Image 1 (cartoon, rainbow, N blue to C red):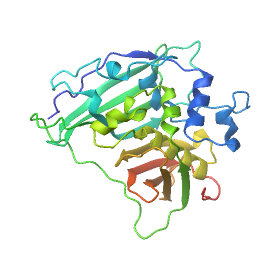
Image 2 (spheres, helix red, strand yellow):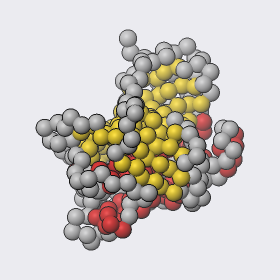
Image 3 (cartoon, one colour):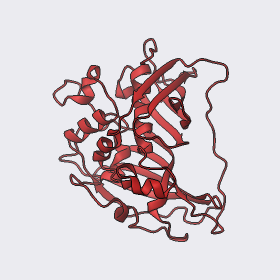
Image 4 (cartoon, one colour):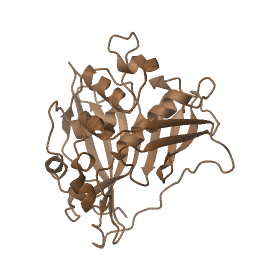
Length: 310
């Protein structure tokens, strides 16, 4: 039996990006000078960092800032209560890379096609809305990425909906030290830079929303931590080659505050497929604090000796 709202299709919308958008994104998630193919548009191998499409449902075609709340609330889901988008957090995100992203959308037509997978009532804590988003070239129908994500609407449960299926977990192997470790030191400005990619949620810029939600002030985008983890894994295990990342996912477990230090621990699980990809599991911890990303799993073509970036 499908859940209320399942299969509901949101209106499609066009998305665009320029080379400068890719440069900004790569810089904002911590790409380094030895990865100029992500940071310099005249590099002979200039490429989009593979997770860039995750920002396009926020950015649309904009080059200017937008009203985040107005856009988020624009399309209610048929068959379920209308939820307050001022109190929504990321639950989990997964993306599959199906075709290499061009370094600009100029001269081509791309759009996001979105639908609801399920809406799940978790009682007093809130409601989970799970969606699928496809990045599609309109003229050819080619799908470049498939993203599945869940939003958690805090305190908006108890409306009588289904609890939803049990989630599959990918814990790190017990008793094994990580094969690689990577540390990212955030600053008080990290979220202010990252938001320029198109995710203008005030929760990440000004203290008032975070105070109302019990965080004590602004928190860093969950997708900042998620994208920096993808960068860490590709840099440490995949020689920073975008072709070496096939899938990436993680669950958002606790908030990250500006100036926190993030530690990514990675484990290679072996068992390469015919194309040389193997499962990598990972977690992201706040130094001296909680684990902020769990259920981390990526399919990576691991090349060379894993190194620790500390």
